[in-house]
Amino acid sequence: MKQSNQAYVYGVGAICLWSTVATAFKLALAHFSPLQLVLVAVTTSIIALGLILVVQGKLSLIKAQFKARPFFYLQTGLINPFLYYLVLFKAYDLLPAQQALSLNYTWAILLPLLSVPMLAQRLRKSDMVAAIIAYFGVFVIATNGNLTSFTFESGTGVMLALTSTLLWSLYWIINTKDKGDPVVSLLLSFLVGFPFILGTLLLTQELPSWDLKAVAAGIYVGLFEMGVTFVLWLVALKKADRTASISTMAFMSPVMSIGFIAWILQEEIAHSTYIGLGLILSALALQQLLPLLNKLKIKSGTSHSH
Image (cartoon, rainbow, N blue to C red; front, side, top):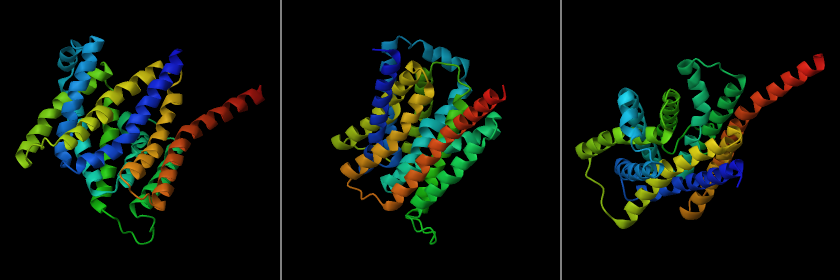
């Protein structure tokens, strides 16, 4: 099987798994508090990533990478998994899954905007256009389509869902400075974040119950939102001829997620969700396409002038 074809197999695998996790969040949150779910999922993820590193023969890298940059992993571990998943699961707890999912997808719009001050990157027109369209989509979803009334089903839920996009974008921006093995780095973030998760839980709540259904849902989240799927996605990106051809597949995920939410959770999908998600996905597509079109224009312009 050709490398590029393998990339698609891994990529599709990752997308399909990610498409199920919004539904799994909701099922798990019926049994756990957001913080309890973070604990179960992160514990699962640490075990899964550890086993993957054993298979890859990279366990020895853990100590070396941590010793090289302990403060870096303290930053990443505090953001992801500790703060990011706590905020995200709380948003899912307060909102219908379709709303939390759609709002969370705007992180890809926020990332290039934050990269301007934080990574000294140039702000492109396409990023601004995409942001305006996407955040209008957010507004449509958050108000259930009642654009003039400004009433939110859960204002706190909407704020938390948007805060999760900020945390996720910050995590990726900090990660651009990472020189280590990405799977090792992810495991180190989780290992560093774990004591904060456990400590906060012991101080504020009781440990999660060992109800089989609940634990199964928590393990599912740990494996397929955090651990295994991330590794599949990394392999897909590595094997791809062009990163863009794989990364655009990510647009399939929210659409498939909505299908699972309607089918398994029996949530009635609101018209405003379809419209808002359509706007967010259009914005993401424009963000990718406009720079390409500009390049083509410049190319055709230079070829005509010769």
